[in-house]
Length: 426
Ligand SMILES: Cc1ncc(COP(=O)(O)O)c(C=O)c1O
Image (cartoon, rainbow, N blue to C red; front, side):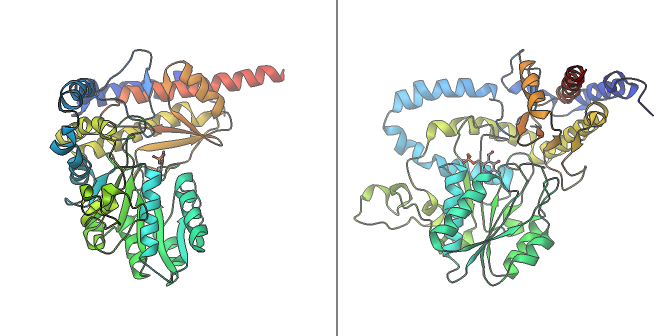
């Protein structure tokens, strides 16, 4: 039987519209939306999992930095505060979002570079072992870095075949790890599907094999709470430009558990990671603690916006943020069921529950064209080849109405593209 109305005019669509309005009315975090920079041209921003919006407070913070801190203190700023900033900010990220006690997180470099440093350090800590375990659906940079290290050291990559619509299971990890495994590299939240890895179970499998786990937290930091200390994670890295709203190219962070800091050695031995930075010694002696994972001069400007976002995260609370993330993904899924899936698209993400992160992926062969049309009308999801649209929902800056408007527009543009194709065939 065919549907009596186009999906966008159905009773269900109207009910969803009312539900989104009611959710916004009752949302305890609703006021935070106005703490971010918005423009009337963008009616629905659904790409917080690629680049978070700027906080409104950041404009004033940046101006104060230029006039008072950089302009006013000049080179004295390094001694007075900037040298300590990667550690101070790292501790705050650790405490507020990662479940990491102080002294284990530092900010600097890019995720890619930190993946190299942490994975290379993990592998070096397991001499004689010949394998790195990873999954074939991890983000390209993770796979490429592991490939490079394997080539560099003559190691083998053991690939876990991951279901792109869900993710890696602890059973799959347990099956492939062995006394040949030096390190396991996985993402906490899969970049494509949003699948949330069962980290405690994976830690058990990795530890049982005597290997070390490196976790990529890019799609969880600031939105899906982690408990790195309690879970017993060895090493982790993540970016700050997604849900920590650090801005384009803001530096990454890495976590190295206290118990490994005295023994792990990372390969990029720069002066900022030396035991005595200004001693200008003839050869490298690593700093103790997390400082040994630092390499070069920290990007102080790049770190500035993260602090403003952490203030918002602190006042809202990670659990409340995670709860809103669940509700936003629920409404996005419902909107997709009404507006998008009836047009032949598929949901390529886990269904509601503990295995779902803060983004949803929908797939359809026409989505590249649909994305271009959406961007032109101020609805901004992202497209991931070959056929996926990701709806990344950043809880503090996204309203329920925004999600409903965006997914409805997605259905409309898919219908328009399908209509044009049908017209062309006549
Ligand atoms: C899972 C994951 N890892 C790493 C990166 C990127 O690394 P980098 O910040 O070095 O570009 C991304 C970027 O989106 C990502 O999604």
